[in-house]
Image (cartoon, rainbow, N blue to C red):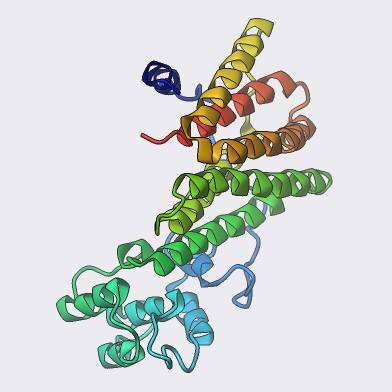
Length: 307
C-alpha cells in the first residue's frame, strides 16, 4: 500500500462509529442471576473488583481453591492465580493479611517481572492492587490477565441473558456464540500483525477482551434501545465505508490479509443473529441495527490497522 493510500485510510477511520441512541437504563425488575462460587468455567475473576459477582471474600476463597499446592515446584514462573492470591494476602482483601505467606507462595518461583512487582508491593504496602493489570508484566501473566477479564465479561453476559424474556434467550445464545467467533477472528488479525514478537499472545487476548466488553456494555441497554429512523442513503453510505475500510485493513500489512478477510466473513453470521435478537425485542429495528452493527464493524476494521 502506498503511503498516500494508508494516510487516506487512517483519515477515514478517524471519524469512528456514529453514536447509538438509547434511552436511560431503567431499574430491572428481575433479580440478578446468582453466580455460584464453584463456577469453575468462569474462573475467579468474576469475583474481582468490577466483576459480575464482585466479592473480595469469594475471590479469596476461589483463589485458595485454585492455586496449585506445588506452585512453582519446578522453579518456573507462577500462574496468575498464585500471583493474585499473593496480592490478596499482602493487601488483606477478602481475608486476613499475611505477608509472610505471600512471600512463601512465591519463594520457589522464578523471579520474573510479575513476581518482582508483587514482592515490591509486599515491601512498600502501598494502595491495594485491585486488578491483575497492575502486576502482570510477563507475556504469560499478561495473556492470562486479559483472558481472566474476558471470562468476567462472559459472566456479565450471563446476567444480561437472565434478564431477557425466555423466548429471546435462544436468539441471544446464537448471537453470542457467533460474536465469540467474530471476536476471536479479529484477535487473530492482531496476532498475525505481531508475527515474531513476544507481545502477540497478550495483544490478541486483550483485543478479544476489549471486544467482549464493548458488546456487553451495549447489550446492557438492549431493553431500552431506541431505533432511530434510517434512510436508504445512510445504509448505502455505510456499505461503501465498510468496503473502503475492509480494503484498507487488508492492505495495511500482507501478513494479516487473510485474517482480516476471515474476520469480515465471521461478522456476517454474527450480524444476522444480532439483528434477529434486537428484532425480537424491538420489532421494526432492523435498519437501525444493521446500520449500528455495520458502523461497529467498520470501526473494528480500522482498529486492526497499525499506527
